[in-house]
Image (cartoon, rainbow, N blue to C red; front, side, top):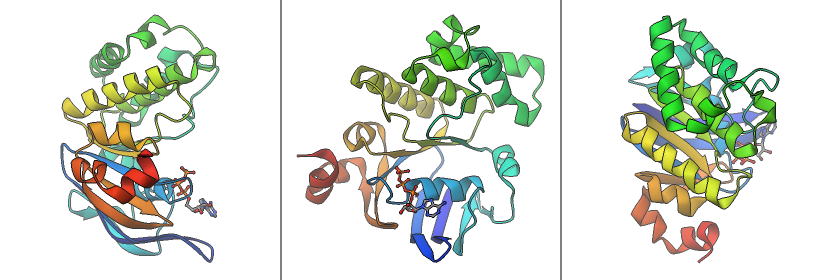
Length: 235
Ligand code: ATP
């Protein structure tokens, strides 16, 4: 479904990612692991069309997305749920969710169906639908950000550190929901520093260091890899 082939991204004279190969097959949940600054967000920005790349290519269902603008990439089915959430704080939960469906100008019945699905995944969002997004807790805001991404019915959902700053119990719930979203048919590419939790729900993973992939494999292979355990799992 998604293929990054020899991808490099520069910020001026600084090469943030270098010659990166990543594949995500339809239906998979794939995780990108790596410390702060390793290059995970840069990969996401390139896939979303926000950052141009200097070398290599990104193919989505076999076609290059190099010339596509960010909104056309969303229309093609790739939706990024940003780190930091970027919600409309003064708008209600409901209004934020409706904004997520805007890009497709969907019919009312379809929007209602998507909304029902999001409320089923995150019942707290239905309870709080009339509250301002800015008044929600950190975990609820993250749920709203994911819910808003789902309103446009992505084929590929990009999740950048959804567990960052959340309490352990909420992190667990978050990973359960991400797994459910994947099981319901949405392909997921997840960037995480919480390697242990991410590898428990992922099919495969890639480990980034200083802009390059240093290890890749199935989740089981990564969970039992000594250097991965030492650096990212703390065992
Ligand atoms: P984080 O978890 O902190 O977001 P990351 O793995 O996602 O980390 P990136 O944000 O992709 O890492 O950053 C990769 C490298 O590129 C870092 O060294 C960062 O300082 C640098 N970088 C990121 N954005 C820019 C920019 N706009 N201009 C210059 N350098 C940048």
